[in-house]
Structures are given as C-alpha cells and as structure tokens.
Image 1: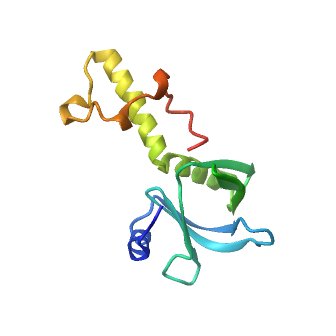
Image 2: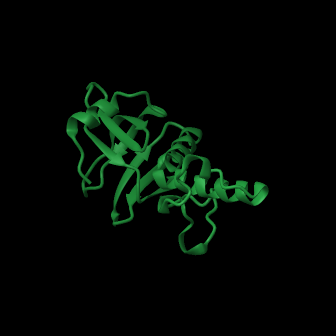
Image 3: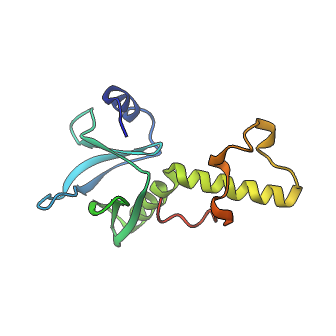
Length: 158
C-alpha cells in the first residue's frame, strides 16, 4: 500500500484514541527496546522519538495479530510475515490490556465485523435491513462471507 508522507505526518498530528510513552523493540534481530511516544490514530499506530514532532514510523493495523507476551508486554505481527514482530512494553498490566483492546478495535475489519453482526441482529429482530435506507445494503463489503455469521468478539486476528 502506498502512502503520501505529508499526509501521514498530518494524520499523526490528529487527536489520538490513545497515546503514551512505551518501550518499543522493532522486528529486526539485534533491535533493542527504546522509549517511544506511541499514538493510535484511527487504524495507524505512530511512533515518535520522545523529543521529536514527526513520527519515526507508522504501522497500519490491518491484517495483523496482537498478542499479550507477558503481563506488561504485547506484540504486533503481520499475517503476511508472522516472524516480523514489534514488541511494546507498558508501565502496568492495565495499560497493556487497554492498548491491546484499543488496537484490536482500531482495524477496519473489526468495525466491518461489528457492522455485519449488528446488521444481522437488527434484521433478525425487526425484519428490516438497517443499511437499506442509505442505499448500501447490496455492497459486498457489508456481506457476510461464505454464509457464516461473524461474531463481534472474535477479534484477535485483524
């Protein structure tokens, strides 16, 4: 996926869902844990040197797996390269849980699954398709894949 660097920098300055200084280790062998300001903005996780305004990098939180490594540490690995893992160290177990939950909920796929789940439930209860009034009920992105019903809580892989 291509990104315009100026647009990403602009996005990184938007209000964040979460932000904190965390220990971060990159995916390369030999990388060490460094203190970074980490910001979650929409479905991007930006990371900054603690004394700089522009991000050092950004992770698009799609097609990734978020896992708790221990009580205060979680990792993000991308499905196309599971060996390439980013590690984040939090200050507390509660902070770690908050980051994991927020990152899982930030993905487009999570939001899409929720929309499909609630659309199905509303249709079951009322007999009406809630997306019909917007003229988007037939769009494939809002359809359940292979006839299987998706559950909103099945979100560890995004």
